[in-house]
Amino acid sequence: MTTPFEPETVVLVEGVSDQRAVEALARRLGRSLLEEGVVVVPMGGAQAISTFLDRYGPHGLDVRLAGLVDAGEEAVFGRALERAGLGTALTRADMERLGFYVCVEDLEDELIRATGVDAVEEVVAAERELDSFRTFQRQPAWRGRPVDEQLRRFVKTHSGRNIRTATLLADALDLTRVPRPLGGLLAHV
Image 1 (cartoon, helix red, strand yellow):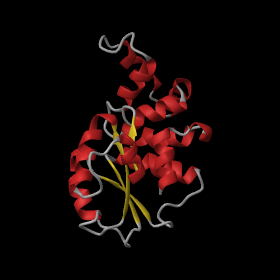
Image 2 (cartoon, rainbow, N blue to C red):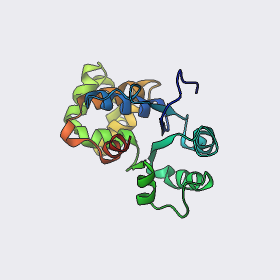
Image 3 (cartoon, rainbow, N blue to C red):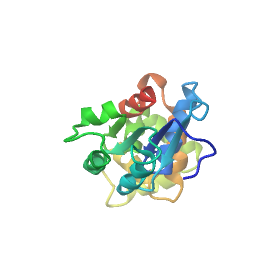
Image 4 (cartoon, one colour):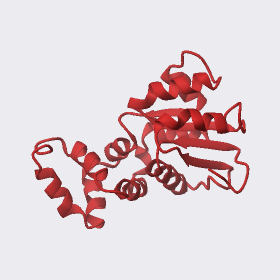
């Protein structure tokens, strides 16, 4: 990614939906990340972490780093941070001290749980997708599953929906219920 200035801090996230959620929540908290020298960089998936650590880490631009990772990719991030020279045998607590926070499942899961099912359904309804969601809920594979799981999957079933929804959920979030990984990340940067 080319930036118009040399960032002081680079926040590495897996995708554009994560980027939009972090930026939206920062705005709601009265912060302008760009003015603070913080750039949120979507990597196109967790497997790209080494490339981005090479670019921005100690052997590259050597800027301050932080990031978000899904629980399923925690080990990938840990190994990459170690290879970049940022620690050895990193635990989750070690990763957090470095500024890398792990989402329980993924960021959508964190936002849905923190926002609450009813409020998420209101967001879906405002996007005029509630009928589509109800149809999705009736599909045999999803019938009877917890609504938060259904919402999480529904958000990811249509191209672009997860990007839009991540921003909308960050905007709908009660600021007293900010998910721990997001709150920790923003406090770190």
